[in-house]
Image 1 (tube, helix red, strand yellow):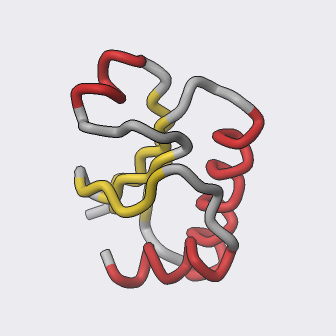
Image 2 (cartoon, one colour; image 1 turned 135 degrees about the vertical axis):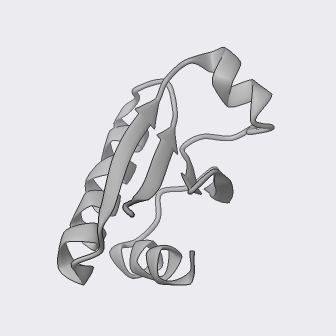
Length: 80
């Protein structure tokens, strides 16, 4: 079953960069994963996120308030 990777943010350049990095990490690792962007502010707040961009893997928040490097993105995917 594919991992569900959610990127939270209002669609700003930082959030778009985070999506690109997560997609690159998925491709390089050959991981079965789907990236979804979550731009609904109510959803973001209800998940307890106070700083974007934020990343969740299979519903678990794993990073908030920063753009991951490609290496950080790979570590996130391999750990979760």
